[in-house]
Amino acid sequence: MEFGLNEEQLMIQQTARDFAQTEIAPTAIERDKNAVFPTEIVKKLGELGFMGMMVNPKYDGAGMDTVSYVLAMIEISKVDASVGVIMSVNNSLVTFGLERWGSEFIKEKYLKPLARGEKLGAFALSEPEAGSDATQQKTMAEKDGDHWVLNGMKNWITNGKSADYYIVMAQTDKEKRHKGITAFLVEKGTPGFDHGVKEDKLGIRSSDTCSLSFTNCRVPEENIIWEVGKGFYFAMNTLNGGRYGIASQAVGIAEGAYEVALKYSLERKAFNTEIFNHQAIQFKLSDMAVKVDAAKLLTLRAAALKDAGKDYIKEASMAKLFASEAAVHCALEAVQIHGGYGYVREYQVERYLRDAKVTEIYEGTSEIQRMIIARMIKNEVQ
Ligand code: CAA
Image (cartoon, rainbow, N blue to C red):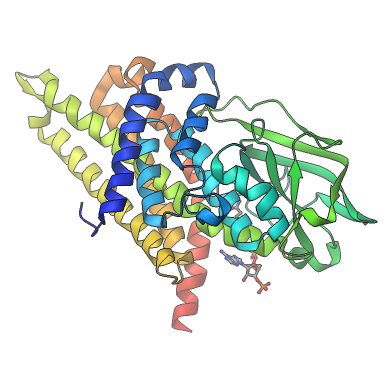
């Protein structure tokens, strides 16, 4: 696919491809099987500049554009979507937001080590009773001198166990609904802050997902991100960016599933010919090829719009919606093409299917993306 990629973008894509093949792929099955967090891989991604890809070098980031980030995310997720989501959260949901809305103090103290990949970040918005309806935050923060005291629970937090720094949304004025939500930077080890056990998940098993608890957890005033009452806007704007990150992860899964299925269909014989020669299989592969390309183009468009300083909210939601459904479709068809071999762990194909499903759920379900798109297309004609 040609998207007018420049030399630097092609070089980053190749670097990510090589790294994915040599450093990530060989251990992906084992890490998935035993739900082992890829600590060493994340460290190496940091050394490559992949944990703070779009952050200005002034804050120790790699200063790359969003298109390059998408290309790298696709290559990494193609071999291991768990590594993909760890990278996506640190880049899209954590460093992006801190650079855009953090104070100089926060950027010096927290953004720099996150961008270097020496520290890992997490983004805590969801709660037991506030998932899609994110304004319903129950976690409370009350001011006490020059600190805020946090009490409450967060759920489904990617990097929940392994992160060092957490962005936590909490209600600081319940009367004001979403205008009374504030974002805080909470360090691991702060008294009163703990994480639950790692969830035993269907897919992306080597990434860790946990609940978080806050019991009289004191956070200094200087750790407020943006300002009091801006936490919901911070979360929404950050998630706009997260959505092309997850779209890229989904493109990687879709493309990975498509490529292994195509290869298998050209090798495996049935009824005296390679199964590719049967029209039933050709139609499946054609549909997969179209979906992979369309998902990739939508995702690159959202990234290119952001790089050009244009609006990209609708396009990011469209990319996430389409790419995540394409990932599930392609993974399902890849299993079908592999038959029984697709159903066992050894062939990796079933992992694509397990990993694909969550892309339709996290960072805004497919239903939420349709809601966002509907609101925006209505606005366009009014
Ligand atoms: N970008 C910027 N601002 C936005 C926005 C967006 N995408 N969506 C809403 N806003 C603003 C609105 O403009 C509005 O501002 P004003 O009140 O000043 O006019 C304000 O936010 C409230 O918006 P709505 O009235 O539209 O609120 P709503 O409650 O009707 O709907 C929603 C909001 C879009 C559904 C939102 O709740 C949402 O995105 N929900 C999904 C949450 C989500 O994605 N959760 C995933 C968490 S992260 C995760 O998955 C974990 C992980 O670790 C990977």
